Image 1 (cartoon, rainbow, N blue to C red):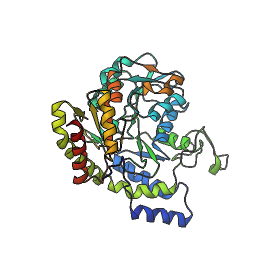
Image 2: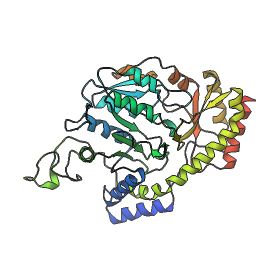
Image 3: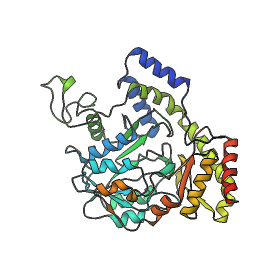
Image 4: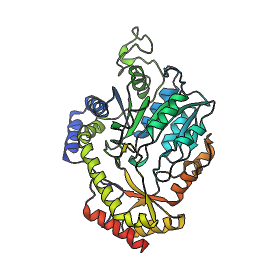
Length: 396
């Protein structure tokens, strides 16, 4: 057997929809992308969803909107100005951090709980300084941060919240989808994620003005896709098809991405139910090793209903982690580090202006002792039994 980190979740419906787009010759962003945006907004329970070409681009677009001169922050809050600080977890993917730097901000890395893998609220509180303007919770591997605690901190200190939900599509916090608690939230539809548009991402918000700013920045500072084409400046004297009122990027998806999304989104709840079922079976099978102290598995944050992204576990020490990883790979089970481990220890950070707030012992433990293997809707009982048997074999 071979247990890969991910398996394709698309079928003939997605392929047929893509072929229809190719035959129509309408392949750049159009009706299918807009239809997916509308369906996603309904699913998430938000007013606006802005589709882009990747989850990384979703983060980029969100932070450049917060840094834009036309950004209107919530009352008492500030936008992202040069040298302003944004609090992020030390255990995250690189593109949580790079867009903050690229938009002129300074990421402040805080510790994470090695059991839940999520940023510690007490570490966030302790990291706040005079230049702190925002917090970016990252819902790691389909779990959820403690959003009640983080929202209280944000409200107390007038911080903008931008949720990075790229690994947690469908996770709920007290019944509400994560990614919808902050001013903005981002999602990813990469090939291995909860649903796929091959490459793709989404930014969501309930703010009408901000939604138009996102659409403007998504495509060159263009007015073409704005609900109010004169919102950011009077362009009535121009050819309104080619009016520019801001700076921007080209982060647009294609109709091929939208075609995938239209068929993948209705499958999401079923996919996540299968992920939960497989996770429960794996947890039950590995419970004796947890009881013996050989491993620990991700603890669900109280109040969260997770949409598991992978199956992470931590060993007693780094030596055991390396040996277990080699054993599983030889057995045909692909493994990888937990996200990027502690980002403060990545070589690129030597070239990035940042601040480390407090000790990162939890993040270090996650990096040194943690690994995860794939969790996808295709898992069946035989896969679960194989993985449990190979891990148990190692510790025997």
